[in-house]
Length: 433
Ligand code: LLP
Image (tube, rainbow, N blue to C red):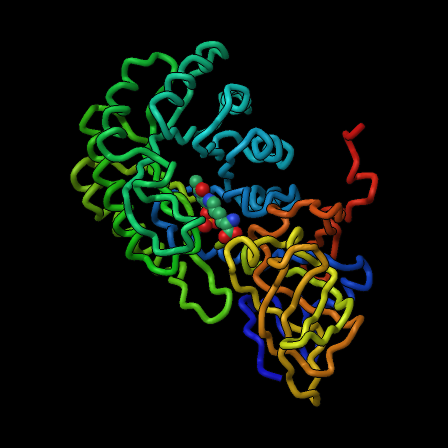
């Protein structure tokens, strides 16, 4: 068969067997059933370590975007490795608390925070979270009021909308003028000035996030320059900026895309915000650099393992119907995104055949991959892995079609543990009457 593209060195074939950190995935499937998400601890930590080492001269904080993968064990793993967390809801703040993420390593993003969520963030830890990323004037007014009620000052950043085209899927573009996110420069400036009149909020940072799965550094460079200009303006208002938040968004390879390397991304950050940057020279300020990567840390650290239920010969194409479905991994249906699909056991002899790999859900979009080459001998009961499923996989899963959500397993060396048990039918009706 054609050699599959593996996007992480921690998932690889040894002989004919696909292994994760040396553990055969088929053994995990046998033990825990399918469908099952399997993550590699080494693969989760590797990009974080690389960011760390190439930003080592720069004061920085990596806040994992919890929306990419919000499993408690994974949040705890990152927190234990010194990372912070980017939350977008009260639920994610709750998870952060449970995972032991320190308050001063949490940022809170999102265009629509409720008063209840603001209050939860203000009460987090002894003095509240590191920063709210504020996205409108009205939000700031409300935040000021909530902070007064709670009796704690709210630290915040202003999220800039730099009107930069990130050249990614329109559903995950966030930095264009027409998007709901952030504030255009003129309004951001106005908000910075206005904030000085508010007693219970304190402007500490400027932030930007222009989109996800970016495969070029050019739009990021443009966004960072805009942010740096804005930061300079804030400093000129005599507001001591403590950090700049550069968001997330760096893309990863799902097949043969050339994603920018972590090292080149860090070099860009050093250039725009390091000690030789324009900002440093013009303001003598060294704000801490906050990053909010999600996909970059988790995407290629997880796979979805599924069993083939049936082979079905259609009139114009052949189908492989697997036991995972769009409710388990919605990315292909939602963004037509590509995920490699590979057999857990390579068969040396069999010639490839072409299949549409589909799930059991009653929707035509329940397709994991069209016209995929897999061994022609593949049969009912065989196992496949859908690759690069560690980010926005389980975290976007639903119970659609009353399908129980699948188990998640974390592998660390030869240690394999369930970090979320498979749901039962009882879980499906919990809370209903
Ligand atoms: N910061 C903010 C404010 C965000 O909105 C996001 C993602 C991130 C950080 C993390 O972005 P990342 O580093 O993961 O690109 N469900 C989509 C992706 C949606 C991203 C939403 N915001 C997908 O499956 O491709």
